[in-house]
Length: 119
Image (cartoon, rainbow, N blue to C red; front, side, top):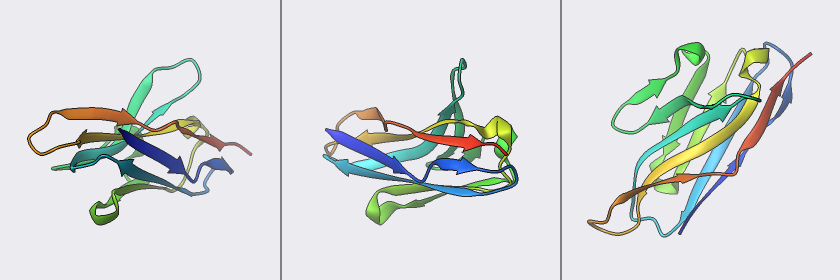
């Protein structure tokens, strides 16, 4: 089994910044992709940023958010700058993981961390 644990959420004023962290642990042979998704109240879960063979960002966060990985530690980070009220959501860490050599890739999710942008 694989566990993902997020940290770093909270309440911040518009224009402020936060840094989210996610640590993956458990039966990990290799991690293909790590990323961040978010879900605002009453909406679906949307991709924010992913880091695998390439790095991808949602259009709404380009230029403000930066994803980074520490592959040696199985960690992924999301630096969020110039936060806006519309960034308010629960942010989920995601990892696509192989738990054994030659095994299938499986999708894992963290429990989520709340980010609230409000004055």
